[in-house]
Each structure stands twice: as structure tokens, then as C-alpha cells.
Image (tube, rainbow, N blue to C red; front, side, top):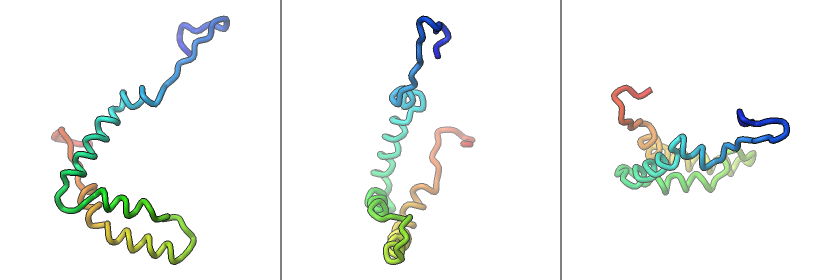
Length: 94
């Protein structure tokens, strides 16, 4: 409820997803991350992520889970190299 809300005239505040994106700057950081993925030279991050997207990691079928483990082993080197290092603009991140 808004601070100037009254029982006769209620005012409800809405926290929208666009407002949240603006305040957390998530759109900006998403663009920065996509640009970093495009500029990464040690492997194609987009292809590695798409490889894992199509496979269900929570399956109960043994063959499908084996496919997932094999695919994850194949892309592990690329993704761990890309996501393993934090790039920040400050001298003391976290």
C-alpha cells in the first residue's frame, strides 16, 4: 500500500518487471555478458550452451542421463573457462 493510501481511496504500489530490470541494471549486464560470449576466443560459448539446453538433466531414463553426462563433459572445458573468471570494474570484487 502507498503511504498516502486511505481506506476510502486505496492506492496499491506495483513493482513491475521493467522497474526491477531498470533498478538492477539486468538488461545492461545481459548485453555485456552476450558481448563477452561473442568475444571469447577459447571456444564457442553459444554452441556449448545450446548443446546442454536440449538435454534434460533431471531425467530418470538411464540412456538420456548418460547423453547428458557425455554432453556436459564435452562442453565443460569451454564453459568453466568462460564462467570461471569474474570480470569486474573494481579492484576488490566481493
